Image (cartoon, rainbow, N blue to C red; front, side, top):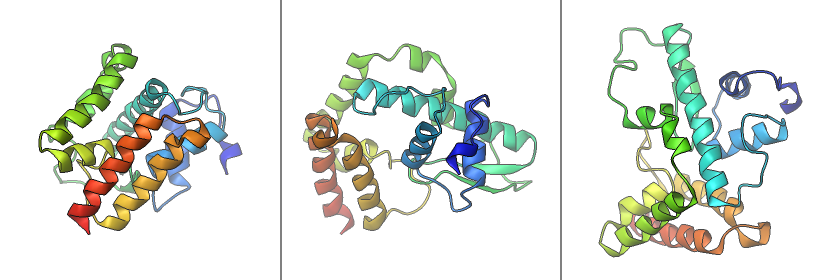
Amino acid sequence: MNDELDPDLELADQLLHLLQTAPAGLSEYELIQQLKSSHSTHIPNLPLLDNLVLFRTHFLVFNALYQLRERLWDEQRAHLDISPLCIQLQPYRSGGAGLTEHDPLRDYYLDMDNLRNTDADDVEKLLTSFWTRMQGGEEKQAALELFELHDHQHPLNLATIKHRYRQLVSLHHPDRGGNTERLQSINKAMEILERYYS
C-alpha cells in the first residue's frame, strides 16, 4: 500500500491518498510512519527522537491536513476530522457550521511563521511549562495537552488514553534512541490521567 505513494505529490495529496485507503481513519503517528516508509520528501527523514524534529514533523503534517480540510470542504468532496488519535475522511455535510467557526489550532498550523520561529529552546520551554503547570494544580489539563488530547472531539476513555500512551512510549523510549526526560513526562502524565479516567 505505502509503495503506491507518489513522491512527487504535495504532502496534502499524499495524506489524502493514505486516508482514502483507511476508511476508519489513522492516528497522527500512523500517518507519519506511513509517510516515512513511503519515503515522502515533505517531512524530515530523521528519527523522531529529537524534540525539535518531532515538533517540525508534527507541524508539517498538521499544516498539510488543515490545508487539505479546507480544500475538500471548498470542493464539497468531504469533511476531514483532525485529531492526533484519529484523522478521518467523512462525508461532506452541507448546511452545517462547516469551517466557519473560529479554530485557533487551524490558525496556528496554517501560519508557517510558527514553524520558522520555533527553535529547540521553545520546544523545551513547552515541556518545562508542562511540569510547571503540573506542580501548580493544572495537572489534568497539562497531561491531556502533553498527550495532545486536550481538544479531542469525542468523550475520552481510559482505553483511548492508553492507546496514545503506548504510541508515545514507543516513540520516545531510550532503548529506541528516545529522550529519558520526555519519557518521564509521558509516564507522569499517564499516572495522572489514570487517576481521572479509571
